[in-house]
Amino acid sequence: MSKENPGVIILDTHEQAENAIKELEHAGFDLKKLSIIGKDYHTEENVVGYYNIADRMEAWGKLGMFWGGIWGILVGSAFFFIPGFGPIIVGGPLVSAMVGGLEGAVMLGGVNIIAAGLYGLGIPKDSVVQYERAIKAEKFLLVVHGTADELVKAESVLKNIGHDVEVHNA
Image 1 (cartoon, one colour):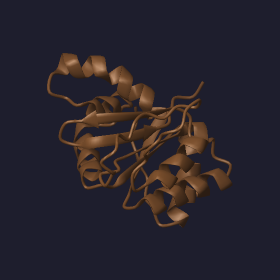
Image 2 (cartoon, one colour):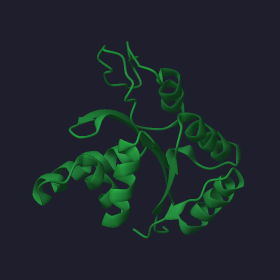
Image 3 (cartoon, one colour):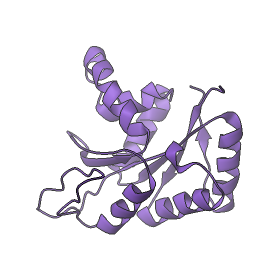
Image 4 (cartoon, helix red, strand yellow):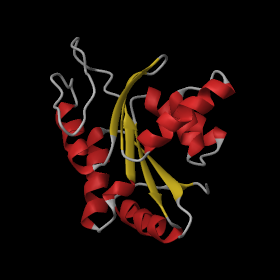
């Protein structure tokens, strides 16, 4: 089996994130290999909650339609409240990396779950800091997990719609 590496795209809006995912889907990319992370900082006063396959969220906040559509496409989802970030919503394989990173975060001390999850995928610390800043600035990270060939395909698709992919060797 070929080694998988992460490719990361920083997207300014949920429309850009949704468009990138749809373009990858249209090109035949395996959507089970996509993760997205972002925050809906403009949520309502209601509890946002946790989404899973059997239930529906009662209150989504401002980006409810976006996140609802994403859950229908990507596998795995989680809602975290992280001090310094606020409510963070994650979909795709990155959820497992973040949950697995919790143990490492405790051992490393002072590392948050986002950093632990991204670092656990093989993303270098300097890039992790850049990605954390993007999330705090209410941008979205789209993480493409794949072999070198799959990442080349994803890079080509995303470059055609104006996005550069930063590929990291895990």
